[in-house]
Length: 361
Image (cartoon, rainbow, N blue to C red; front, side, top):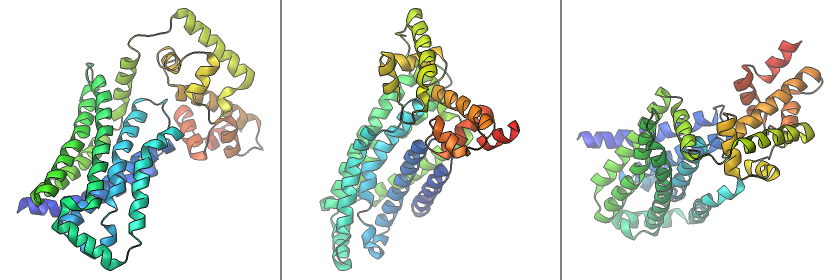
């Protein structure tokens, strides 16, 4: 009885919470790509929870067009989790065009699902009835399981990286273990889904929905309780990656000199599309060496170093060129949006660009 009550309440609640978390993430002041990835992850979990609940309750009979919409999200949530972990652990990592390749399976699945929506309502209802009777034989559910398996590969890759961080002693270890358990939960839950479909056992489906809802709520509470959850992890990951430094004193001194010359010569930081590989080629070092230089020698990231230079240049422009708009100043020094300019400027100076300009008068 208690399990039935939980199965009837937790999945819809978890789906609603996922949607709210996605909206809150989009309204956050973090980097745009990071916000979009995390919001997409929350929405994927919400969609899978809602679909699982409606399928289990056989309520999909009232909305047969919703039956196959879970398939793209099954392909999507694994890559999004991997991208989220990768970008959180290393602030130098950005979402670039090659990363779109990881989302192609989800896009293909979405196109196939949308083409199926062109069928008339009676055909969709018949397909749904057949899936209720023989779920293991339904092509849509088979594609769903394939998507879950692909996503599990991304979860395991993420776990492999987190294990390297968890091996080191420190306050970060608990955070790493929590993320590892989260990553391991996805393959475990997918096994429950598979067994539930093959054995036609609703109790297994109920257990998977309840566990996923609880996991989402736990993740939400942990992030609320520990807003700096990833900071210690990022430091530990940095120490793990640069345990054997490749740059000696002479190389560090040379890089110091080259960077100062570049800043004076062409203000390279004003290029909004500049990435770590671009600068490493100009300095004739590997990306790993340049990342090591910033993280260990400058005690910042490549992105943090660029932001320091950009904010310094923006402060000067806001002070000396009163005719220019705040937005044009942001674009001039290398920021790609007003929100990013405001967020970084406030982080480094404690004021927004507009407040800084007014304080100079």
